[in-house]
Length: 248
View (cartoon, rainbow, N blue to C red):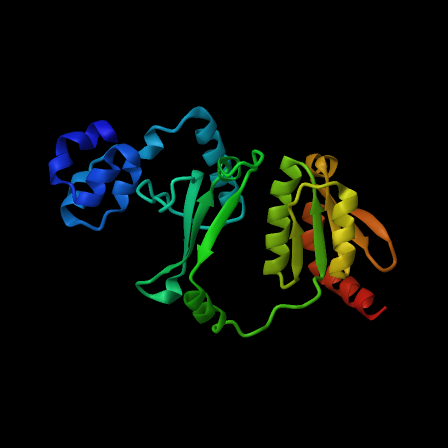
């Protein structure tokens, strides 16, 4: 990027000239028309990812695909702070007109260590509250206070599958609280108790490999193991069981 932009330095806007050696990617965010014209053919960051970053980005894209969340790659998307690492993102809604961005953020794994703390993986974002309120006003039903299911998982493959299970159950009308803390099963079960969920769904590495999930009813402690496909082929029966346990 620096090599590409340096010959055009005199034509860049003053802010971009200052950023040229300090943070050249921020120049892609310039609102100056001439600077935008210059950066139009700038090298794409997607063509210059390191091996670790490339693998990480592929995993992120695969998870979005598995969850059937539509996304568009934008190699010109940059955030305003220098400590971002890996993926930056924006979440947009078609219901907001021209001001479509509801949320923007990304990974910043190095921030805690920069502030003197331990190495800590992190992700953060900022939400436009007025835009979020506009979207929430379009919802007809308030969320349930007590979840139907508390979904516990541990292990990379199990966590990926739990995202899909949670999404499908929510789409079927169930309320689901998803625990992706990665902490020990005992701690996750304690949080499930505190949530007052009717049932717990448990996915460990063994269940992930076998494509199964453990279903545990919190009040009776009754539990059984189901094939993940079987779980979604018997949603009516599952709803009846849920209603019985709510009444008991």
